[in-house]
Image 1 (cartoon, helix red, strand yellow):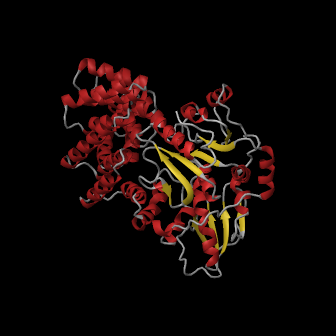
Image 2: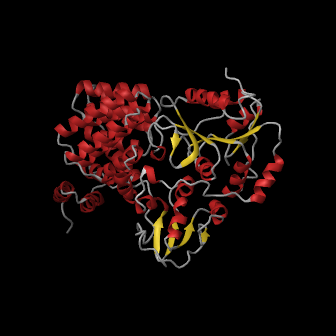
Image 3: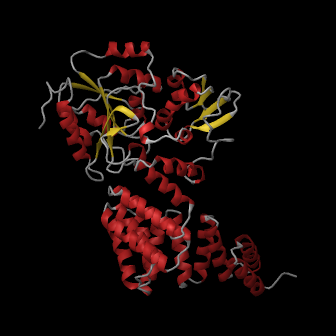
Length: 528
């Protein structure tokens, strides 16, 4: 005989309270099998699906419950949460607005309203919703945290930092879970770095850990701040936590940090990770392994294979779908600085450590006219929306200074940039010819100067020992350190940073001034 729904519901509630979500769901499903219109069981099933990230099922159960009784506040909050998680903010907005008509000061409903408005790109309205929630409930941590995030998204970084800090202190006072404290601290640290205050971020993260909050993502982020500040000894150790962060792939099987004093006669396979620029930057360590008696193989992306095959001290290079040769040690490229105990002063920076094929270089030189300087340009990342990317129109000031011939060094050019180039600011399009990084290297070798954002082209030009000017966001990645105009990784590089977050105009003015003084160009360029 089947158990009575009341008995099953009590058991489901006990399982839920104990965090035994699968068992709770089994009990709730058994109730619905007997009584398909059982409100409490449907509601509980929806909540359990939310916990287990079964979002579509969650929305289905919660909407079934709402058709039975749509006036229950906890149900409506869960409905809005489900639709927000499914990125259907219009539904969440309607639910939240209906709740607020009945209870105008309901902080949770105002918080969901703000989240829905944020997803609809109504940032100012979202900020007002979170502020209103805090008027009614000053200790409502979700609204305060979301207010900080919304301010950050709108570019109000100073107020965002203050709001994150207030959230952190209130989270401590409320004895919030360590995971939430770590999340707030990481967000505050990020904004402080964006504001150009990495020392303050480093102090914050140390203090949070000293107060007993040890959380993996916090330790990982702290390592990025340490690397940015040049504290490589601590930073490289913390950087090994990357494999346990959701944004990274699983570590290669058998991956280890090698003992560089015990490599004689060993076969070392260096395996790819992250982007092309990362591989180019850290491939410099391969010959150093060879000097210690290792036989070194590289596993790289296909479009890097030809370029890296010409690198001295490398026994072989394999592409993405090729079988690795027999090996004794597997090491990811970005674990090598830790293996060598690299400091800012000991970065192996002898360039060029990569070379272009002479025949390909001669081919490109034969295509370039001798009447002007030739400047390579890369302005957009393949990562949509990346802060380091810009548009050709944002760089328009560069093209007002002639004579110089500009060459696109990227494989993807959007329609707006093509239109801009064709409308009187020509940047030669070489996409069809740039079949891999070896071809791009040959073109770079034939040019006089490269101007680029932080992308693979920057690392390639630096590794080739070519003059390269790198356009960086106000708070650039850790690899460019903090507040420097040079790079210890690339002696021929010059760094140009945005004066403020998103200020491409200010950065372009810096480069225009530098071009006027650049050797060989100053005779035909005048500043405005």
